[in-house]
Image 1 (cartoon, rainbow, N blue to C red):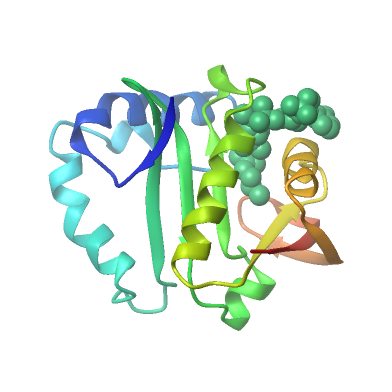
Image 2: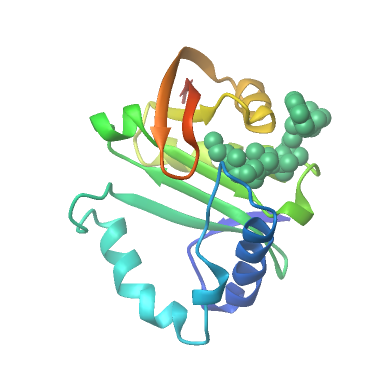
Amino acid sequence: MLKLIKREELYLSGYKEYCKEFHENNITYFCPTNPNAIDGNWFEKTKEWYDKKELGLIENQPKTLYFWAVDENNFIGEFQLRTELTEDIINGIGSVGYSVRITEQGKGYGQNILKQGLDIAKKKGLDRVLLNINELNEQSIYVTEKLGGKLMDTIQTYNKVEGNHLMRRYWIDL
Ligand SMILES: CC(C)(COP(=O)(O)OP(=O)(O)OC[C@H]1O[C@@H](n2cnc3c(N)ncnc32)[C@H](O)[C@@H]1OP(=O)(O)O)[C@@H](O)C(=O)NCCC(=O)NCCS
């Protein structure tokens, strides 16, 4: 059964494999940690940074809650929730990030993670979330619309990883 949990060292090797799959497949829409940086001490080394990020204490970075999606002992993917709607979030990464490792895609996990993530957002007191999606990311557009996403607009935007591209902005009411 798929669960969203707080980051846990027990799943570190699965997290590393997940990162490796994304890096080896050059997926532009989503770029997790470089797997080469994940050694035996990585979890401990980064813990304080993640704890601060969750409290909104990292300068110039949005407060973000991190969840790992696991099914029994298998690492499946991630869910990230940015709880404040700043200008940067509205025009940039949106309030939700979610992903499924390449080898587990197409099995319903993406929809399940987003559904569980939306429940978490609601429990945190949010009444809507914003998903900003590259116009070419057909899978995420499909999943977002299936879970009730309403298209606000499509804007031209730029970031280092995706370059100049069109981005759809979807609201999901909770
Ligand atoms: C988006 C993502 C999370 C989806 O995960 P997933 O586990 O494959 O999702 P699911 O299996 O639950 O659902 C995929 C759906 O997309 C559909 N689909 C697959 N390819 C598609 C395409 N090219 N166009 C439209 N729909 C497509 C599938 O049929 C399936 O729908 P169905 O179950 O109704 O048949 C995954 O592709 C991913 O991690 N992508 C990289 C990270 C990312 O882009 N995150 C979102 C950033 S906004």
